[in-house]
Image (cartoon, rainbow, N blue to C red):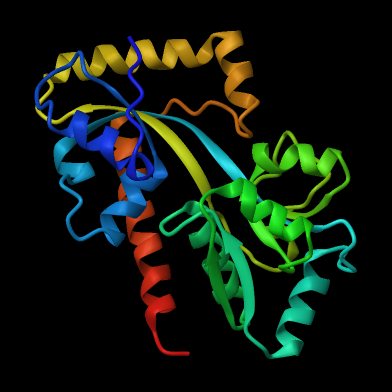
Amino acid sequence: MVENRAGAGGNVGTALVARARGDAHTLLVGSSGPLAISPITETQLGYDPLADLTPITLLNTTPLVLVVRSASPFQDLSGLVAELRADGREVLYPTPGVGSPQLLAQEAFRQAAGFPAAPVHYPGSAPAMLAVIAGEFPFTIENLVLVAPHLSGGALRALGVTSLARAPLLPAVPTMAEQGFPGFSAGGWYGLLAPAGVPEEAVRALHVAAVAALAEPEVARRIGEMGGPPVGNSPAAFRAHILAEMTRWREVMTVAARPR
């Protein structure tokens, strides 16, 4: 039985599962926001993802795409970066909200490219993309699946993807790592978790079942449509992934908070 608990960018549903300690029948399909970003941006979150939840497996990763509007003069990432550096003025870029993977990806890009910039927060991705299409901002970094219709419709142009490997849905678009930003990687991800205190045998059984489900052709196809292939790693590897993401984005936010 699936119960959608919306609110606070996924924090409400995540907290609900975190409070169900020891209940192997209450599971969470969690995402990068409430699991790796909110814990370093919220002071009274109400849960600790590594103490109150038991990672089962990483389900998939969703790459982001740096896009400009089709009328933009920039045909590649190097041209955009050169202009942003040369201008010297603070660049504004749109985001779908504080704490979003899109915001952190754009801040990481700003830091790596070395130009002054500041975010403008919108209540979601749709208005942020429309603002770029309207020419209000020079670029944005957004979810691949969300920008895909605008790319195929000719309203936006993709200059780079944020995954380390090229996205299967956009094989002709080079990664940002290929274009002068070695190791650059950002994006959202989803995973299966149980509350803390679940017996180890239940964790093993849930992991085996989840990995088997990910291998089913129809499931793999649907997940591939989200922008990335199924993952299905071990509980230990998924825990390490969450910790690494928290550490990495905390460093980006620390640099962002310094006076410029």
